[in-house]
Image (cartoon, rainbow over all chains, first blue to last red; front, top):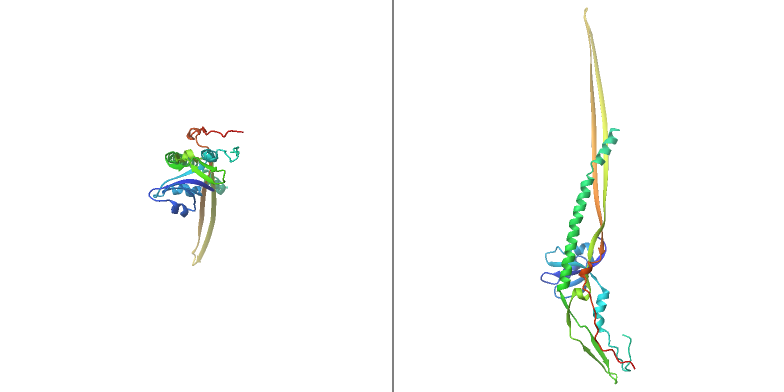
Length: 88
Length: 177
């Protein structure tokens, strides 16, 4: 199982960041006190799931279309000082 | 010829059917565990919420000053935000069996002969003794290694797992001049 993949890692009592780094992974986003999104080798990710301090280490992928749609609300309403549209 | 037959027999003795059966069973168990992890991940992604600010407005006043107002944050699950569980599937499995068979035969034969003759007054005797020993040593070394290689590929999640996102934008479009 070569290559790297994204994993949602949930610690049981504390942040799993140090455990992720210990297996050669890299935290790319902190989603809470005990949850991180990390990139690590696939085999290491599945192995980390068996660690007693890890509640979950599951493979995830990012649906950029959905993310863009959710964040689409942040687009401007198109109102410009001139009163025209700004091409949102 | 006999040695060649032995080598052939050794190759036939490789328990290939049971190896394939065990590999298949092992892959089925592993596949089930992979699916369980992915389903568990999906459950977490659906339950865990993050706070998202759905929108903000930048207003540039006539005098050039800029003001920002943001909408109230809303709670969305990680699944709604766009984090999807990855599902893996075994796509290929290979069994490699290599054997190193070494057969040696050594034959050793030793012959010793002894002859004695005695002659006396009207009496004579003669004796011949011989000793033949025959040793045959056979050695056989069989070394075998097997290697199992599997290939995992990602597959799309079940279609029903992905929540359908429908966007209803009720913002008033700016009036066109």
